[in-house]
Image (cartoon, rainbow, N blue to C red; front, side, top):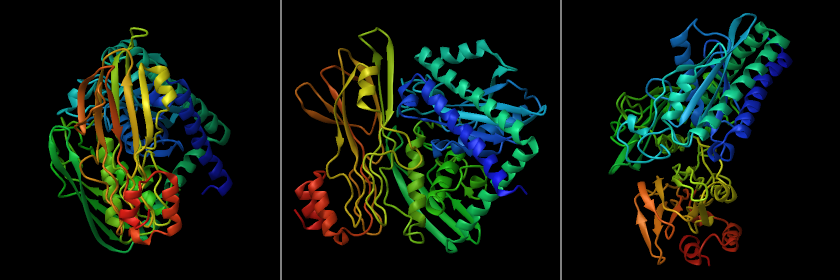
Length: 554
């Protein structure tokens, strides 16, 4: 057993390496989705492929994907891993991915002549080919339509690039120069991570650092089991549905039973809908990330994200359902579905963890893709963004306005970055009035953004959730406002667009207006304090009609 100081130093080393690698990707990437929105993660695994640590700014949704990459890599290549190798993958069905735009990389760390660890990272690329620009459109019915599928492959062998493989990848992606820049940023982060970890092993010794890895996992498992043990024994149920599957309006059902006994907890998704033709299905590892995030947030928010957190939780999800789809199921919109899984977990445990539970958040990962040819340069472009919305009301304060919630944790792209890099004009960027669900503590508010192409015609793809079914309130709180897409024509007339709008032509005399969902409130509106109601009135975020209807004020 290591002494506390040595263990802390050995723990902070991987954390610092992850954070530095994360910043390397951010500073080196070409696309706004990575350098501005920070849609990337870094992690370190031990020689067995067990995930030890993620960067502080990593996304919870990437946890199980990074973990599965390592598991498959170690199983496939075994002893055939050499110093200077670098592996790449993205496929959800054979390579541990969760959707194709997220490209994983991993590189081995050698010390004392043997494999001792891996550094890995994941970045969401703005396009990886497929039937629709941006690789994130609704309406896809099989994985092959969503982009280039990459099994776990060796991109570098003993430090030498497989140039033919790299060229093949880029040929199947739009904007190959941008993709090359983002992939090179990931490669640079891997190399930096290996260098930093080798320095750590050299300074403190291979045995010491490897012992620290094991103790980190043991301590995480102990904390997780203690949190689980504090939940009252019993069986708890909840269910919720998605608006549609991207192909037709249908209730895509997620049914959950949580069975808790002592330090054992089982999340059983039996009864959820069969996998659907549209691309809202989840692979099992996406469900793992969602459940572990939700449980960690409810029980121990400071708990490290690593292998032990996942191993402490049992998940039952029948194969062939939306909670554990099988090939060739389409999965591109999995972030929206992961958010629904989190809402279901919180809903199931709300009665026994009332102080930790919150109202349903915007329940979505509202995505926008504008793509075309820039009239200023003649070069093609793809602008991809996912917009935040409301966070659910909490037991002691209001939900946050206009933020990414739960498992995504990315930034909203600044207007200045959009207009500098793309031939687009953002004509409005605001909060949606009255969108937060009323309650003792209100839900957060959704965002409105109006975007118009400048001097050209482009293509628009949009994906929304909680556009048909509002995010629910909790313990008597009111639901938040639903989201919507609208088309504004040259005469100013507005028309409603479908929640999953694919490949729509948008001219310079038109604009798309997106309004993301708000969030549900916490507790009855009648219990909101007069001071909080007055603050709402003075904020300008709520109309007199809304305040009078819910609080009797004006």
